[in-house]
Each structure stands twice: as structure tokens, then as C-alpha cells.
Image (cartoon, rainbow, N blue to C red; front, side):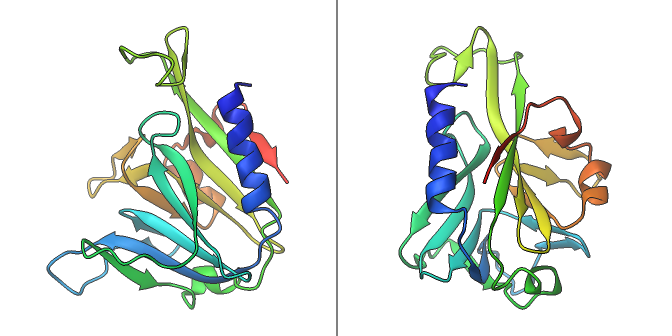
Amino acid sequence: MTKKEQNYYAKIKSDLIGQKIKRVFYDELHYATDDHFWEHSDSIHSVDMNILLEFENGKICQIKWDDTFYCYGIGFTILSDLEENKQLKTIEVTHHKNWSGIIDSELTKITVFWDESNDFQHTNKEMAGMTNNTIRLPLTWQMEFDKQQLWISALEIQENGYTSYWADHLTVFFNKEQLEKYNNPIQKDSEPYTVS
């Protein structure tokens, strides 16, 4: 385990584990229409930018695709309030049937599933988090609450059914069957790590 990975896990533990979810929002690109495109199916939500979890303590966890390890893995930032961005549309999904069972629930555990590739050429291996010629990044979080679990992945399911991994996009899976259907790396030997 690298020092960067240790710091990542420590931040998850200190900032997220034990928090209770009060409200949930999605940040979507601001399209020229009022239509919502995030509800891919009954058990999958497809989010352009960020998933915002407001905790009981008033802080907000902004889950996002970022380049902490390499573009695009799962990262997060703690915010003190919702930040206005005119390029984004913030949509509250707290009362959506998939999230309603998680509201007021404690986040007890996050399992981080990693994906790796050695197909990349990068001039700065240290910056890319490379050991030898391999890049590793956190592709999926399995989040466990009191009575429910969900998965957030940095992937995008295209309209033709093709799945783009390491994507500038977040997909929320509310059941494991759908997660496995899209051949998520959770099925591989990805050496998951659990923070609780």
C-alpha cells in the first residue's frame, strides 16, 4: 500500500465513516432543457459531475471523479455549504425512492475497489501513481449504511449499452445485479480495501 493510498483511506475514515445522511443532491451539466437525464433505470442513476451527501453535522461530502490517483477515479471533498456553479444544475434527490431508505442512516463502511492498467504511457510516473508501468485508481466505492448498500463507480453507460470505464462521469448502482451486469471491476481480483 502506498502512502497516497494510506492517506486516502485515512481521510475516508475521518471524514465519512459514522456520518448520518440528511440530504442528497446530484450536480448535472446545465443542459438547455429542464429534463432530467440522471435516472438511467429503476436501480441505476447516471450523474455527470458530483454526488453531494449532506450530513447531519451540516457538512457536505462532494463525491466526484478526479485525478487524485489518475483520471478518473473516485475522489471526494468536504464542503461547508452547497457551492453555486452556473454551469451545473444541482438537483435534490433526497426523496427519490432509491435514496429515501438511506436518509438518517449512518455510513458504516466503504469498500474501495481498485482498477489498474499497464497500457498507459505517462511521462511522470510518480504523478500518475504508477509503480513499474501500472496505473491504479479507485474505480468503485461500495457504501454500506445501517440497512442498505449502494455502489458508486467512475463509469458511464452509453446509450448503446457500451460501458466506458475511467470516465468523467459517476454511476450509482442500487443493487449488485445491475453492477455485475455492466461488468464492473468489482468482479475482478481488484484487492478491495474496507474502511470502517
